[in-house]
Length: 142
Image 1 (cartoon, rainbow, N blue to C red):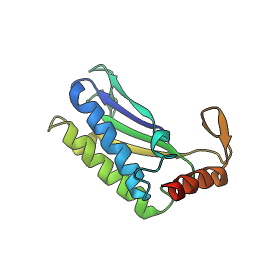
Image 2 (image 1 turned 135 degrees about the horizontal axis):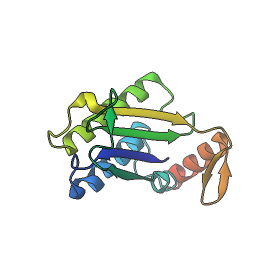
Image 3 (image 1 turned 30 degrees about the horizontal axis):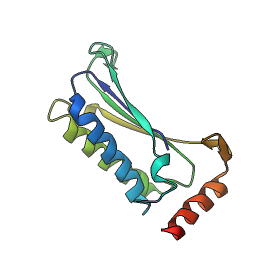
Image 4 (image 1 turned 90 degrees about the vertical axis):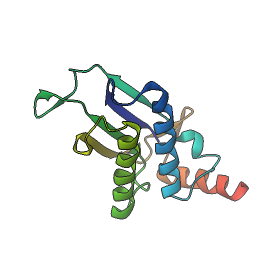
């Protein structure tokens, strides 16, 4: 489940980027009761992309921003409540990591859903049902 955090250089100190990413990972897992799930935990991947100041924009003008993007199967964050929790709490994590350098109104979030059967992990294509089975098997084994 790729998480991509895109931030303007200088907003989140390098030593805080990994912590923010870990918190986002924990948030995604906890929203679904999957903390510690041996299949799902290593499947939450991603990166922090730092864009040079002056190369991020709002209303067409150079502005510092943060963008939180998440791609998941359609059964993840499937309810309005889960979507809202991911966006609100994810924004909180980024705002805290920026230590006052970024106004909340410059933090944006996006959730995209992968096509059923188009999800690949370790070279294997998974349908939503296959993913659900793998997650449940890992939960049962714990």
